[in-house]
Amino acid sequence: MNLRRKKPADSLYMLLDTMCNAFGGIILLAVLVVLLTNKEKSQAATTTGSQALLNRQLALAQTNLAESLRLESSLQARAADPRWKEQMALLTSRQDLQDQIRQMREAVAENMKDVETAAAADPAARLKFLNTELADAQAKKLAAQNSLAAQEEDISRRKEHLAGLQQEVIAKLRDMQRPLRLPLEHTSDKPVIYVIVEHGRLYPCENPDLSQDTTDIHWKPLGFMAQEADPIPGRGLAPNASGEYFRRLSGNSVYVAFVVYEDSFEAFIIAKQIAVASGLSYGWEPRTEADGPAAFGPGGHTPGAQ
Image 1 (cartoon, rainbow, N blue to C red):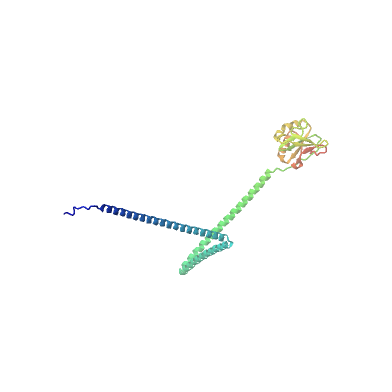
Image 2 (cartoon, rainbow, N blue to C red):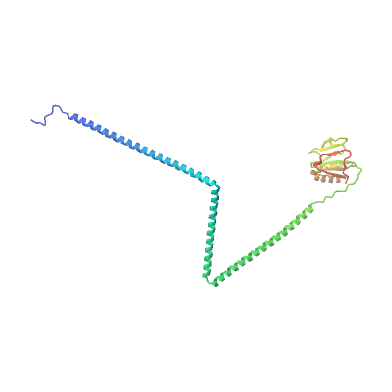
């Protein structure tokens, strides 16, 4: 009887294989779950550690910042303190003194070196060197004296030139100045025509026909037969245009009395020359702005003819 060909009545091999495979799969899944869980825990731990490190670094930075601000405030308070400023000034002075002492020491060392060199050199050569330096110093002194003498000579020449210029200026001023000679007045029985010279213009009180000029002058009554004359600015005659007026007056037996205000003296000079050229005698009376408008009436002063 062949046993290899004998088959069992019911075989559990397939069931066992299935169960083993299912168990192995469960174990594999469990292992994978455990591994994934451990990886997530390690990552979480790493993240937690990094966050804690960042927190510690942030706290340290905040502490350093606060310390820096406190140190800055302390330094500013020290800088504003007068005692600190005084100490800084003393430190600066000490540094300057140290620099001066160092320079003096270096100069002394150089001088000592020169002295040692001079002591070690030949006396004859040293004397020759000193004589050369003395000659150079004397030449420089002579050049300086010559330059000083030249400058003094130049200053003297300039002073003389300035004095000459001053004399020329004085002479020019004397030539430009015209001596003022007041003409001699004399009495006259001719009627007087008043001409107010103000605002750089002429304001005749009467027209050529001897009627009162009410166009260029504002008249204001002042009591008994007295009137105040107030020239209207911009009206009247220009000094150079007064020739026709004076020529028309020359036919009358009158003379002209100028009432001259201080702002119109040049206009008076031109007008009186034209009046004289027209054959008229004239008189004049100076006035200032403080005197106010001219008033005419009985008892008033009339300048004499000239």
